[in-house]
Length: 182
Image 1: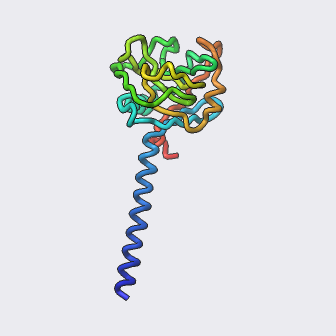
Image 2: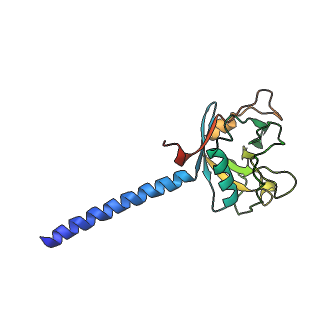
């Protein structure tokens, strides 16, 4: 009888520990998901901190400050990408934080990749980013990939085109998933 009791108690704690580990992993996963709410629905971006730790840190910081809420897509090129993240809507603005240096990895600019926009200076990324409509291998090694759309790419495809668009779409709300309670 004592062996059976030990077995049951051990099983209880093992299963409980596995459940807690699953909850921790789920929370950790949510820490690396970004929700971008557009007029048509939610885009979910998987953040890639192992590929671009400084860029992911910046995106999370700005999302948590609600910096991106209401910012338009100011440059949307059919067959290429949709760019946003400039509070002035001109393509020339950014946050008040210092620029982030280029982080090159083996991540490719394929459809759904999210990359950091910058000027001609490689270490000039700040708050602007773009989402790829199509593959663009010529960007590999020249820009930082910090995320990938894992849900809602059809909503990205529906963003109004133009440079700038006549009636630009905007990011209604941008949040780190772990902060939403959803």
